[in-house]
Length: 503
Image (tube, rainbow, N blue to C red; front, side, top):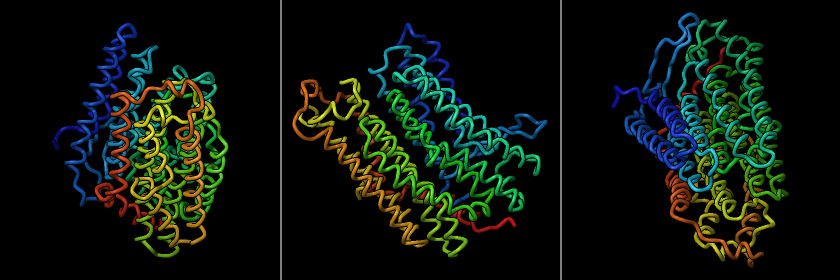
């Protein structure tokens, strides 16, 4: 399998699937569904050799493909993957299959376009995770906005136009700063390759400007406090599938960008301003958690919870700077980075599952308001079982994936400052507060109204979606070792890049 261009297949197969799905047209919705699902399953099957053929002992990029793309400017079609990329690509291909299966009965207008948008989006997101050329990364990074913009703007709720425009403008504006930074690096070093940019000597002033350019671009994507306001709007208005992809994959691109750009290219500025990102992460973790407590819309509550949980990713990433540079503790830095990565994958499963659960209720009741529910467990016992499992994982219960990443980040933070660790640990309490309160109001108690009494339990299709999410959540929670072993060489290399100064 080594001679096959696996990464190119993974990028272009879903995009081709999207084109064929469009060709099926809206007059044949069933054909469109099956074509998209066949291509999504084929893409998932192609991603498996990444895991089986990966050499865990090597920190260098694997499955590398390199072709000249625009030779005049030395722009190359350069793809490669390490342990971090492979974990995220695996998450993307699996989630896309689940999203398509989940939307089977609930989307009935413009079906072919809906499914095609998700297929094209999948290809572009895999492109982001595997691009080793900065401009190619940027093309994929911007390209993703278009299908997502369409998904929210066409199949969203009543304020969909407002939400999609806000989402587009926020993320587009952020990425312009990154483009300026990348052009500067190219003019200075004469190469668009990420490895060359990482090796380029830069003064502190240059690093500072580049750092803030990258910070704005990726902070909007994560989203970090205070540029997080587009996310609740986008989630509330997006259809269920859009919310799942947005929460499970797209938010990870911000965290991934930090690992690929900030840590290797501007390590000194990253160390200098790590305190800023750590402070913003703690604000996100605590303040946004408190905002989640007062929400009346289920989707909005889970969206704010996403911002709070992603705060752990940025905290684990930037605490590593302080640990390596100030304390000379490379092991703790690796633990923080590893925790951030596990949290990214875990959050993908948990938030994807939570939004899928809300989608199941919405398909039956056409309401997202918490006050319209109550006593759902009486009518839907199997559904209640899944809901409670994901609620526990969202609260960070040991034995679920939510605990592993957060625990690793808190453990690393403690070695930097017990106060930071304490503030980060607060989120577990706040997170448990809003998640359990939501569960109490929706699932438990007496049946509040006649509509809830008539609800039917989950069907086979919903069983598959929630069952796979549940297996992922429990598997990483009980046995995270395969995931951490996969990422360990890449994490160790990142930790050594943090330690090396460019001044």
